[in-house]
Image (cartoon, rainbow, N blue to C red):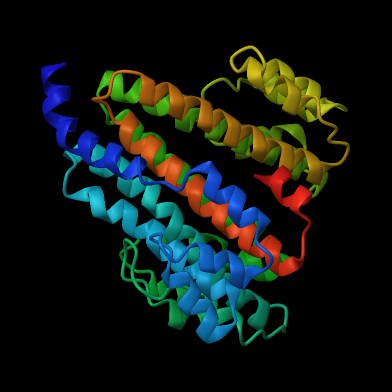
Length: 355
């Protein structure tokens, strides 16, 4: 325990101070009740998000304001790096890689739409992050590339090159990014599981409770998507799933694949561990899109549950870092959601139901 105290004492103090500054629910209530995007942004003037008003005011483009939020979230990960021991740094880098992978996917989608589908959207390139996240990848070259070989070439020295080389021709022959993007997701979770396995026993147990359930629910989402939208057989679905989850076993995979009522399987899957989710699980999810939305909401609720458990427990573990990231991600998601809802003219009742 003395080692854990030495390892996490400083970062625990810093992150608990930052957690205390996260916007309270009352502010989100005020944002939800604001009359417009401009009025909502005005309410953020005395917060760390004051710059969003300037970005939106000068461009009128809410997506550019969202890019600023994304940049801020990435900076959160970098800002604590110097305070971490090596094993925790590996975990933070693995988590940070999701932003890089998502950005790379978005850049490749622009290339794919232009080169394979013949669809050009000049504005799409404005929403790519061009600053390096973990690797110096020239996103402008990818956006304007002439071939997947060129994209693979500029990803030299990154873990993405081999995936692009393997699936580039498949994407062009099938006219779909599906296999490429699943391979990127597998890479992310494989690196994340490796980083978790590199932690000591106590940290590993804390991390797997939070991240293992995320892997489980990602796999459940894939089971639904692969069967419904891609008509993959059971064995192909099982082979495509991510190892390293918390509860999901082969029997549950088979049951989910064959189930007519996915909600009832989810009830058995998480209801025993998280009985507070019973009301959420009882909500109707009659189609695949609704089920995927339900799974996302379940993940959010489980994260909140685990974060509260971490904050109330022994303070000197990697859990404080994970709790901080989850709470900040939730804060930023709620801001994005409210601003977009205001722009779309959603009702107060609808906005409050999403919060």
